Length: 392
Image 1 (tube, one colour):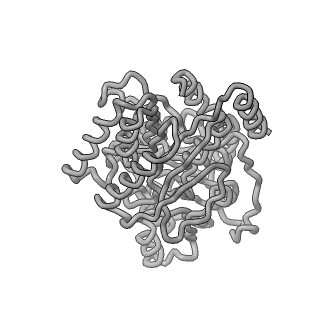
Image 2 (cartoon, helix red, strand yellow):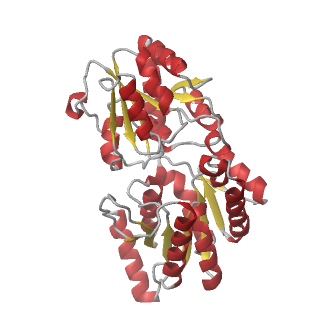
């Protein structure tokens, strides 16, 4: 109904006063399938009366997208490295240059150069959403020349952005201090307020109802993000089954480790899947994990999507003791924060929590309470207000 009202309102305005919907070109470097933040952004922008063109890339195995707005995915000649980033930004620049638009929206630093240059050529409003502290991600942390190139791009391009946002207060403060910015909006990647969390029986998903279900989910299950230790910890945990859902460069290693430790009957690996399908598993789990290590600034100050998905599903958590994550979990009394991410520490925490059913129930009840208040629509509202202030 909201969309029908929005479309009708703008049709009336266009008929009587010649007002048209402003068009936003949203740029992303992934294949769009599991990027929930961008999907939610676009949905809210459409609800606010904007026309959307979403640009991404097509990969082998990419799922079909069904969106209510226009989507274009390019089949780029390269998939990683400098040539990939060059081809991505060349594609984005020329696509933007020859497309109708009023606002350019760059998601993450790897799409910012093309949007910055196009905004200069066309004199359009530029928005920058930094999903992570890109210049400190592990992939470039120990590659000084690559790091300097990305720092140059961010330092050069960010000053032109009329609105900048990111995912956690700590990353926001880093961006402000590093680039002398007056304001960075904080938009946590919380679930949509109207997303239904229907209970699912474990049997329906092929899980043993007599076992505790432990869950690690995400699109960045990468090396040294705690997955290895979580798999190893299953040697010391009984009457529980570990689900690992998603993708990332650690998945082959985790599967190999599971086989070598003879844990294949205690661990199930599932590929990335649409959000609604993934959340069917989340709501029937018993404990969720987020075990990023304090190896780099990006992980240290991250606030992963899974934390809010777990809360929305009423799921108690065991997390690593990183500032943003542990603060959210401890202050809301929804789980435990580990001082160290080791197999022994994880197994001890799980066994202790499994034995303390009263605490487990309290964590679940508190997670359900905080989860009920999480709303992307409310979280994103300041962005819509700022766009209107910019007359964009």
